[in-house]
Structures are given as C-alpha cells and as structure tokens.
Length: 269
Image 1: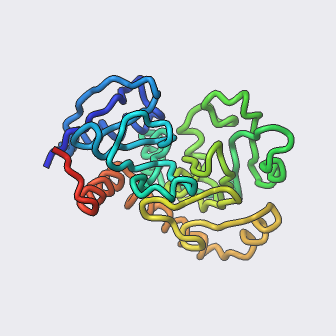
Image 2 (image 1 turned 180 degrees about the horizontal axis):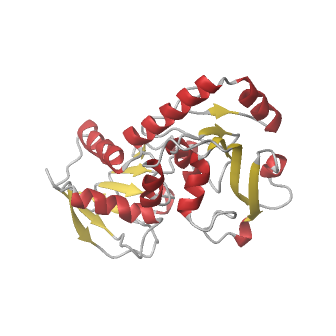
C-alpha cells in the first residue's frame, strides 16, 4: 500500500541531507506518495504519515511542534519525553546516507587506527574536556566555530571512511542526548564507545557489550578496549552493521513506521 507522506522537506529544506534522501528512497520504492506542504513558523522539518495531524515524523525537538498530533516518532527521543505516551521512540538516520552507503559498499576496510573522535567541545569547563586526546585520532574545535564539517575531514564521505578504517569510535554527548554520531559509527563497523549523557532508547535499542561499549571516563575506555579480544571486537562490529541495516537504513526506518501504525491503530487515510 502506498501511503501519502505530507512533508515540508525538500532537497534544500532538510534537517540533514539524509532526511530528504530517505524520503526520496521511500518514494522511489513506491511506499509513499510525497505531498509537499509549507514549513510552519515553528521551523520543524516535519513529515506526516497519511494525513496532517496524525502520525508525525520529527528529527529534532518534539516540544517545538506547534501543530497538534496524535503520535510522533521522534529521532532524538530522550528521557525528558518519557512521560508523554504520544511521543514514541524512533531511530535516527545518519547525516548523509548516500555517502555512508558508498563507504559501506567498500567494507571491510583495513583498520588503520585504534580509536577516533572528531567533533566539537563547548567551552573550557564542558565535561567533554576530560576526553581531549584520549583517542588515537582526536580532532575538535570549539562548538561556536562548527560549520557542519567534521574538523579533520573535508567531506562526510571522508569522515565515514575514517570511521570504517578505525576499530573504536568515541561517542561523546552532543547538544542533546541523541546524536547521529552513535549510529554512524555503528553502521560502519567501528565499535562505538558511549559515554555519560548519551541515551539510546531507540525504536529498538542497541545493547551494551553487543553493539557498543560504555565508558565513564578515558581510563575506563582504554581498559575496556585493551581487554576486548580482536575476535569479540569484530563480532561487535558485525553486530553494529546488522543493527544499522535492520533499524537505521531507509528500509529499516520505514518498517518501523509501518509497525507503529499497526501497533497503535493509527489512521493514515
């Protein structure tokens, strides 16, 4: 059944490139009929499954949605929304799926580095500062200078290839508890290391020590890395790639939309 998707998302009006890439993929597969609607003053890059006011797909701050909804699948689902039964956990998509998928097709790639972080640090007193230079590749800039680049890497494809050629990826908490860094790392066979403040209550949550490691500080991170056998690391990397395909890929995310419609008996036409 082809479902109408009412969306303000376009190639130039999109939360991240992948948001439009995913909708375009769904359209090409014949799963949706894309209906363009204007973006409201609330600035939400929102899509409505079947009808406006029913099931919303929201990539960022659900609390900022100005239009009433019956349910919303939230990419950045976090603990301060747990008390609202109308806000449902969804998985996040990567920033640029087309670039990530291009690198995925090259896997497995030789692991040239042990660990990596590339991102931002907010001020001299931010908790992230304890992690500076804790990984073999550690590149950062102050958050106020962030311009949607990954610091060391000129393109997202370059960054994704760096993840794919590294054994472990440090995932520090972003501007909110859910960041695309976590699932990008999973999808490229780089074992993520989640840290305090990171949340992972997705549509189907990844599992600690199956898909990722957790560390409270750099010493704990290095201890866990050193104790993990290479065979166990490889297994976790494979688990991460499989998780991405099942729940984060365009097909995986659309399947979770369909499961949500069925579970909550949501009217879509």
